[in-house]
Length: 184
Image (cartoon, rainbow, N blue to C red; front, side):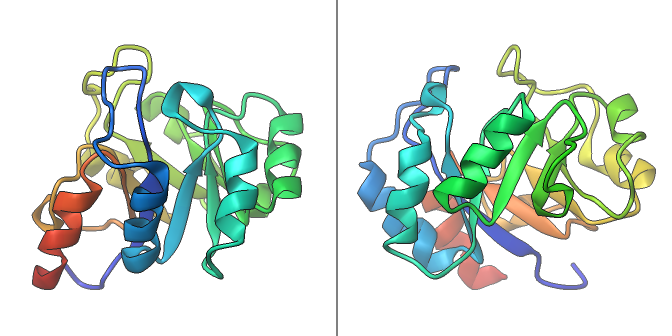
């Protein structure tokens, strides 16, 4: 690994794929705030999130906040920014507002090809429809996209970080990842 990637530490209490955290939102936030360069706060209730949690997070940290969710409309992006988010994850589309504050997550490798290289992109190894693995890999995504690229999902330890990742978004395995940081 040439350089230490930005760590985006996610506060996630549940997922629609059966994950339920053993720790509370506050306990997970404490861990995320300790290790993250950026704190990821869910806005989607399916992942235990809300826009109000962004406001809550802003009272406990000076670190940048990523509003994590699908954000299917530009109004959702505006709502996240108004709640205090510094960045907003947008899934499956190119936003028309706050493009400089958005991290864009395509659904497929083909979708990655249409993201401007000046944008920030996220390659999530998880298929958001099934919860399983996507067919495309981070390595394939990196070959397609030469700009800033974040690796997301299925990151348990620092050894799971792929060469070429500018950032990693760690959620489900936040505690295990935290323990492995001494190796980074």
